[in-house]
Amino acid sequence: MNNVVASEWAESRFPLYTAERIHSLFSTSNLPEYKFNESLTVLIAIAGGEGILKADDQIYELMEGSVILLPAHSDAALIAKRPQPLHAYMLVIGTREQAMSAASGAMIRKSEAASNSTIQMFPHEPAIAAGLEELYIHRSPESEARHVQNQIVFHQIILQLLDRQESKYAASEQPSMERSIAYLENHYSEKITRERLAEIAGVSRSHYSILFKQLTGFTPNEYLSRLRVHRAKELLINGSGTLREIALKVGYKDEFYLSRRFKQQTGEPPSVYNRGSFERVAVWLTPYASHLLLLGLEPAVIISDNSEYVNAAGLQPPQTMIFINADSSVEQVKSVLLDNNVELIIAASQHLQQYGLNAGHMRAVAPIVEISWMEIGWKEHLRLIAQVIQRSERAEQWLADFEKEEQAARSLVQQSEAANEIITILVIKPEELLVYGARNVGYVVYQSLGLQPPAKIKREMEKLGDRLHSIPIEISELADYAGDRILAIVFPDVKGSTAHSEAIFSSSYWNELPAVRRNCVHYLDKDEWIPYNPVSIRLQLQRAAALFAGRQ
Image 1 (cartoon, rainbow, N blue to C red):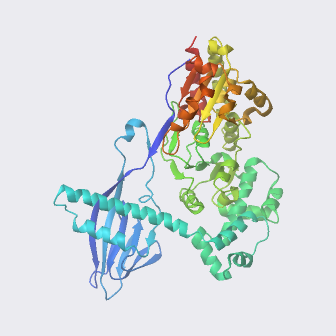
Image 2 (image 1 turned 180 degrees about the horizontal axis):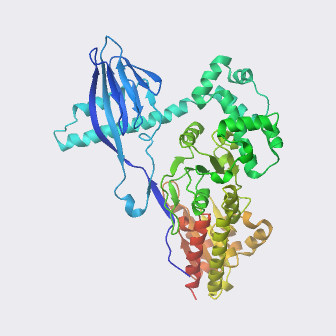
Image 3 (image 1 turned 120 degrees about the vertical axis):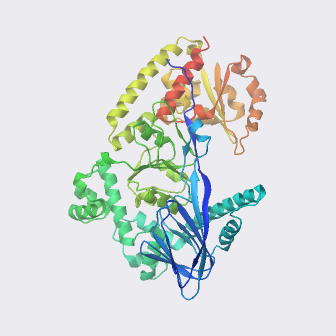
């Protein structure tokens, strides 16, 4: 048994922004046009005059205070409106990795301001324009103090850009339009007219199409087709019925019409849809990301509430995985998923509901496969995900190897004094006190190692199995769950403080427990013992074997 203990969690870090160079541009009657084709992101701010920016068959009207963010390698031209000259500042923005990242194994996340693939225009941002002017004037700083001031101004510009990007997504949230889009997402299998959608939105039919395209990037018909075809893909992945039955379920009159739409959108008919060819998969929240990594498929995007990822021996470190915060707006999440050509989304309905969402909100981006979270255990999570991406053989081999490790660890621990003890797993959170059951570290302690839980936990486990996460208790109930040994895990509050646990540890209820009096309490790190996924469970098994077998 390998008792080497190492944390499986590594942090992802953002890159550092760098101001590569800055120029002052003038377009006059003699030289009315300036062409861009930079290998890095370019920020353009109009300091005076009027003009247009032409790029990708699009024309952007510019005036004093306008700001344009050009992605790297954009072919664009800045053109003055005669006879008035156009004055602009051009800042080339680069990024580089933090020097400390390599030593810690951290993954560098993409820059929000410098990695967009589409042109972004902000019509009136005089503060950003003034910042670029200040940088240009002091481009050759006369002192170190001015150099530091330039850094401050530069990062203020980046911060303003990030704020404007967030505001742009928030500004697109028009309640009336949202209602109509939600209606479309919930009634896609029915006959829906544009007149009905415009009526829900409270706008004219023609204006509705314009607003819809601005909000979603698609026409209403394209959006509806994506909803239907992606739902058909979900049903094909799950093996739910014949093509005719699937066609009727998603709103098409027959399988021939479904096939036509399916082929228009995907390039292949549904009869040959190959679910095993997924390469661009997104996951909602971190647990399912580790399942994919274990199966040899790096998620393209993780929608997560933190920036950690599984980093363990035997797993290929992520190369291109992108994080987006789960608290981002639906529009922002959709935009990132579309920009990254996601082919499939894996999520649990419970996790979507935590953010006020359901599968329908994401279905226009890609088909979504829901893997239940609390209803089944981690082994079934792995098996179901492997089945979806057709890597079941790999999953079963991993599980077989894990079961051998379980048997070895159990044999080792059953020779220790812990084999005859009752083990209590106590979790102390800022707002509640919990006794853990069959999930998280409870799986390893009670199921892998076969150790005994408190009687009340055992009864609930017999009824609920893997679904028993924990039981909330009052401090006065501690004695009812008292074991010969206690594993205590303290969750810090939002400020990182664990002071709330002192109310427990200083109480008479705690100090009178037999395990406390015998000094049989183990204080465990939540990051090492709480994660619930195959990789973490395997590492927890190693830690638990070392913990219990070390006290013979």
